[in-house]
Amino acid sequence: MKGGGSSPTPAQRPRSTVLTVAAKDLRVAGRTRDTLLATAFFAGLVLLVLGLALGGDTAGRTPTQTAGLAAGAVWTALALAAAVGAGRAFAQEQEAGALEQLLLYPGPHGALYLGKLLGVLGPLAVVAALTLPTGLLLFGAAGAGQAVPWGALGLVAALGILGLSAGTTFYSAITVNLRAREALLPALAFPILVPVVIATVKATSLLLAGGWSGEVTTWLIFLAGFDVGTVILATLLFGFAVEG
Image 1 (tube, rainbow, N blue to C red):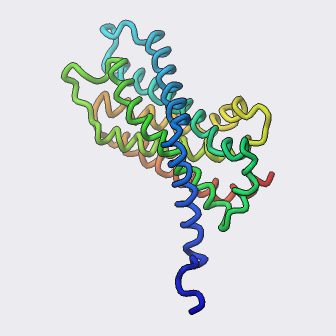
Image 2: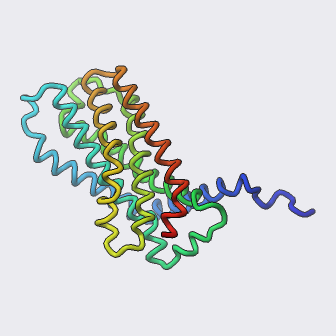
Image 3: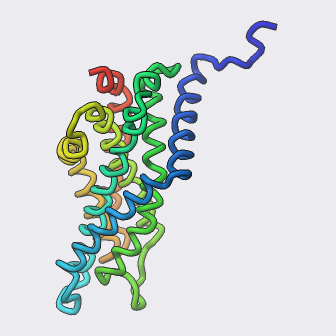
């Protein structure tokens, strides 16, 4: 019987593309671990440098100052780590000469972007799960009987890494064929990611200093709106970005 259900419908095809591309990238990341290790090393190095430079006299700081310093260090490290991780999103296919074949994959280009975004999110989520508690401990914002709202911080982290991944993945596609892509990717992406960094730092510091409040809710709503808007725009514009 023709069309016996084996072929995906037009509505299913984009979802199939997203899942196939994401599964391939996550499988490669899990097998080689080069992206995960590079991202984790870079985030740890940034935390270490900032800790040596700024983490000295914790006794002379107020809880608000300590929370702000810890939040700033953690999200600076994660923003830079996101650029490192996303830089590999399309580089593997480009180096293997398979980027054009990837762009010919059945389905809209926006589905390819979403699949790559999920592939970047996986390793970055693992790095964030390690970086957040480590940074808070390093800068004295956690431990010694201090109550840390880990559940609320997890929500901030989820929204934050989604925004960071969405922006860096999109610009990774733009810079993949450029000779100096490692330098151009952060230069292009970071101005767009400034709202994410500001919102995550503010929400994190407020949670650490005083717990949940209306201001935290406002920042989270802003983050969620930014994430949704960025993902939608990047999905719609991705075809122009990769063909440019």
